[in-house]
Structures are given as C-alpha cells and as structure tokens.
Length: 385
Image (cartoon, rainbow, N blue to C red; front, side, top):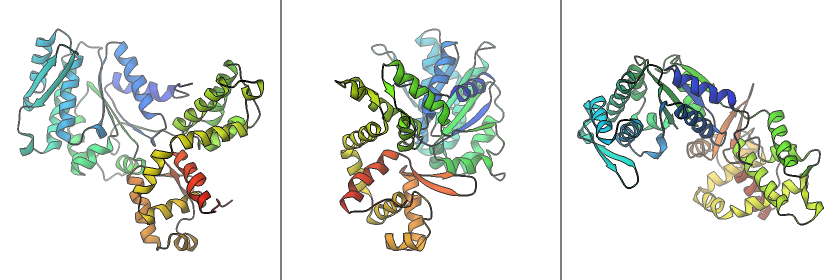
C-alpha cells in the first residue's frame, strides 16, 4: 500500500524551485514524507533531462566528504563520455583540484579533493563546491535545470557552526542557474534559522513547513485502497488507525500495510473486515516485532531520560513543568528540560507547536506504544485521561 499521499503541492514546489533556479527550505519532522517528496521531484526533473544532485547531509561525517559527494555527483550527471565528464568536473571545480576515478564494472564515480582538506576551512570548501556547481549550470543549454537538494541540511550547520550560514548565503545569493532545496527535520533549529531576522538565511528564498496530511484526504485514500483490495471497512476503523499512528504519514502507512497484510492472509470472511479492534491487534503485532529495537533504544537511555519519557506518555506531552512531573521523575524542572532537549537532539522526541501551546510528541509513535505495552504494563502504570 506504499504511496505518496496528498503531497502534490510540495512536490510541485520543489520542482519549480529547481527549474527557476530558486531557493527553498522544506522543513518537517521525520516520518512526514519529506524524503519521498524530494525523491519524487528529483525523479521527475531527471526524466526531463535536468541535472539534480540529491544528498543526505547526515550520511557524511565531515563537510569535506559532503563536498566530494557533490563533485562526484556532478560527474555522474555530465554527458559526453567518461573522459569529457572528468575534464568538465576538473574545470568547473578547479579550486578543489578533484581527483576522479570511474569504475567501468559498476558505472560509478569516486574521487577525492586534491587540496589538503585538513588545512582548509571545510565550509569554504563547501562554498567552492557550490560555486563550481553554478559554473556547471551556466555551461548547460538554456532550459536544462540544475539543482542541489540537501536533505537534513541542519547537519551542515552543526558541522560548520553558525558562521557557515553566512558563508553559504554569501555564495548562493549570487547564483541564478542552480536551484537549491534545503530540507531538514530538526524543526525548531531550522525554523529559527529562517525566521530570525538577525540570521543570514532570513528571507533567502521560500519556506514550506511540512505538516500532517489532512485527515479527510488520508482517510479517503486508505478506505479506497482497502475496498479496492476486496475488504470491508467498519465505521471508526480508519479514525482509530490514524489516532494510533498520531497522523504521522510513515507510521500511518506502516500500520495500514500491516492491517492489509493480515486481512489478505485471513482465511475466513470475518477476518476480511477492517475494524477498530483489528487495527489495535495489528499495532500490537507490529510493536512486538520491533521489540528488540525498542528494547535496545530504551536501555541506552539514562534512568532520568526513561522516567521523563514515562511522564511524556502519561501526560500526553503536556504540563511537563508541573510539580507532578518533577515528583514522578525525581528531579527538578531544569534537569527535566535538559533530558527533553537531549532526546530531541537524538531524534526521540519533537515539539508540536500548536496555536497557543507546545506539545511533546515521539518521533516514532510506535515507540510510545511499546512503552505503554511493556514498561508501563509491567509496572502497573496507566496513561492519564
């Protein structure tokens, strides 16, 4: 049942940004379909002869390796044979003195920077790579877009420091042929980066904040898919599915696929109907299947972090500065805030900013469910109403 649901507008925005040589910040929590949006847009652009480099910054432990990834990615997209592509890359990225190798057996490029990266400011190396990409774009026929999509862009700033923001802006604000899409999941960090008037990325291009898929659209899509497969859907089943997955697109589709698989394998007519109890049973099955992973994640946390997560689950992510929370965790509000911040940095929790309040949510709602079914159940604990 895997599909990209109701993200046509976001995909079109990414495409338009690349085609027009613009700048876009795509900001949204993990599991909200950001990577699928970027891949879909890149695939469509490349099918129309565009040059699109799509890299995940978190896959590169250092900025100089990210720079190498940009250079070799450029070589992969250039036409005219291996020799000509190598010559073009060395010309466009001359300041980096790239040394490239092409593997005939698997058709891939590899390489390294010819300059001594240890003696260089790595952010400067990145801006040189971006300038080289602009030269590459200028050498393409008019109408052939060139784009750079950097997923988990916040990693670049974490590696390069706040000074990197100014250096990157200074480079790309003069570029007119390369379209840039900077995407990221650390929503608070990126939101501050693009909305604070004192910071370099303020008003640099457009911003798209990726939220949950509207329930009406998701519900219609899910019910249609179940019915198309020959299953019946009882009232309330889809709502319960969305509630349990907390409207997180990745988890919704994972739970829906789990339900679909169990219905498909059902032997009787009774088991071919999707209802709320069936959804509950399916989630319990999925959580049990992930028990080794969740157990490892839980045991890696400190006792204070574990008690903080229990408080987040019990209180549904609100009122965590209360006396009740401090008593439950056994620490003061300051320690609890540090614990929460640490788990946000490590991708366990995220902030959900509502109209007049903020609620803490799990990046993976199924981890919260595992805590309820295992840790809380074993200790006779119940969630607050």
